[in-house]
Image 1 (cartoon, rainbow, N blue to C red):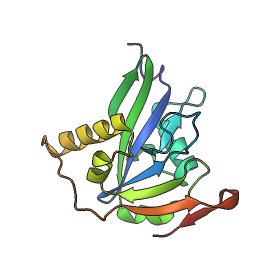
Image 2: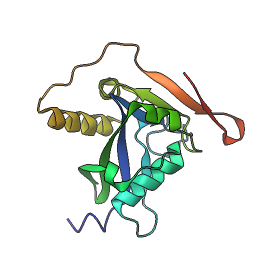
Image 3: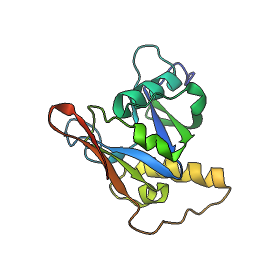
Image 4: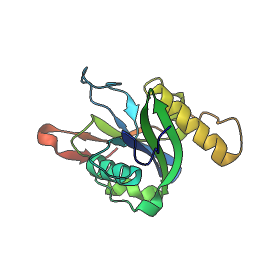
Length: 168
């Protein structure tokens, strides 16, 4: 493999708000991979940016959150037929959800328990595995229990004209 810091196509961020995870629901456009699925903030690399800069820019564009590079922890490299993607984790206080300003990509943003993302058929399958593996390594265990139902909350959707709406 060539240098993954130089030869990568994109970056994703597993964004924790306290014990919850902030995720996006992808647009339902047939022209994109995984339409309508739950996704992590992130996307394709612009120009010669670093993996960290890519994850930070995409998070700002999609959720209006400006994070510091020091908030990011590299947790996974995915090689899909030569397309290298970086995965980061950021653990922030739960109150960060109050600062989200939904961007113009995706149908909605949600706050959910990580275990619910892992168990959801609506989440991108390989992202479920990456999150599960990360949490298992972090916890030093091989089993993540599913949380009780009812903790998944839709927090924001984009209305007409791309305006952001927040609330439970």
